[in-house]
Length: 129
Image (cartoon, rainbow, N blue to C red; front, side, top):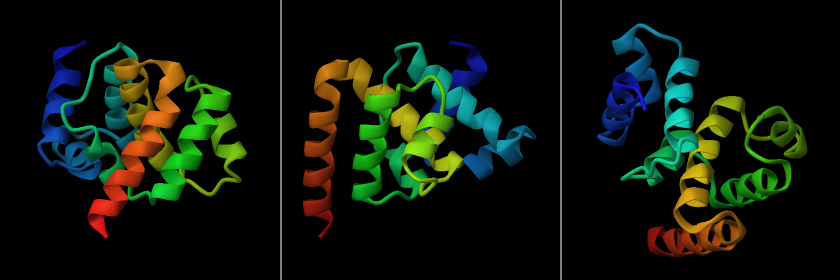
């Protein structure tokens, strides 16, 4: 992982938004999403994976359906997932959800990831109520 990717991930996990990082580094939002994706894709674990979901502003239902779509269509390309979800989740949200999905896939293994994520999301929603 490059030092720039590590810097982006660290600042993101410490509360900087994608928009803040884009302005600070004078790059497009997609560059920030790519750093987050690359970090997760290479098998690194986020210390605060919930920041990805918070930044994406997704409901628990959207996270669950999105994760299910990644399980079915894979995480290499976003377009099949976007289309499977009826274009209901925007690409910027999917970038963040994909990094979240990859974090958990690496942490607990692909076959268990969907069930574990559903449990995590349900527990988190119960706490937030």
